[in-house]
Length: 359
Ligand SMILES: Cc1cc2nc3c(=O)[nH]c(=O)nc-3n(C[C@H](O)[C@H](O)[C@H](O)COP(=O)(O)OP(=O)(O)OC[C@H]3O[C@@H](n4cnc5c(N)ncnc54)[C@H](O)[C@@H]3O)c2cc1C
Image 1 (cartoon, helix red, strand yellow):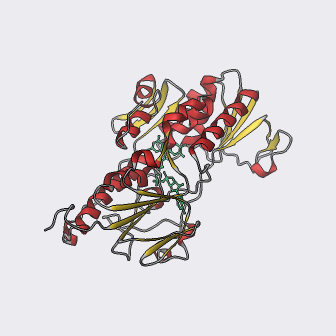
Image 2 (cartoon, rainbow, N blue to C red; image 1 turned 120 degrees about the vertical axis):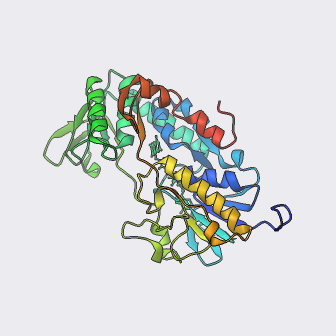
Image 3 (cartoon, rainbow, N blue to C red; image 1 turned 45 degrees about the horizontal axis):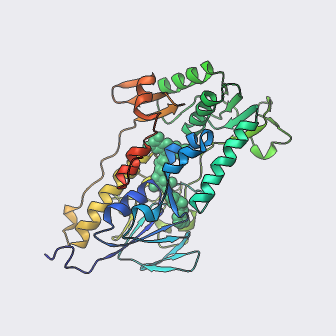
């Protein structure tokens, strides 16, 4: 069998330069002719972005231009708008041929196109927090909880209210982790209002009413409700029939899109029975990298690697020192889980995974 250098390199197009797409493109860039299509020119480490709201310079290491870790790939900073059996089409008019395609468009994202615009965004968010005396956070998932905690620790004098539609915070983990997060926030004087919805379109002159009529006054607000799946653009493509009712791409155990031999999907956009987090997305990417190499070498289908579903463990940071963690050995809250995540928020580790200096 010819080795990788003797063969003409196959073309792999990766759509989406988030957690899954970035590590996949990085891993295979020497073995394939790789094209990364992303709406943004940079990769953002998502689990660091809430610290950047209270400390904008924290984003300097967490916003990484794709060209910094993908010297061998071709990068197209545009939205993918179509897929045919042989090409991916983009909003700026590219038609990118592929031998293999990987879809990694996660959740819909309207982040700034350039790194410097994103840095400016965090500076503006910081000024918004600094100049407010009362702050409303809508959504009690990990984003809302982590943001409330960052503000409560760095700006203890601000009145922070967190309104959540569900009956407990952090519904993606067990009730014990929810209780601990609630206790922690309450002890930092964050007012948590559960089981009430808010329509942010009705926010006017700093006043808004919850679904059960509670009036909330706030100088500013943050919408931390979930984002929709980034798959609506796939509906009218050859992938349309492989979407489930929730708009997720159905994949087999090899991370191949059902009904397609040479198209893979990874990360949040897939229908794997796992919690949608970064570490499953990275594991999907590594299995896919392995399978792309095997397929390109003409390996037998039966030799393809399979993805084993990830366990639900999670660490939700609570400011700069503490965290609540659901781990295989139990649920912990305080500075011990905080030491695992909350100081650097895994920024150094994630940079190293992309072959970059941690600092
Ligand atoms: C605030 C926050 C904190 C989090 N904290 C943690 C944590 O602590 N631990 C953890 O494991 N997980 C965490 N997560 C979840 C984790 O970030 C996601 O599960 C992970 O990012 C999913 O990776 P992905 O590659 O599927 O998608 P994403 O990382 O969302 O990347 C999708 C990419 O696709 C691009 N894109 C979308 N549509 C198109 C298109 N049509 N054309 C081109 N590009 C497109 C987007 O611009 C983006 O770059 C957090 C998420 C958020 C938002």
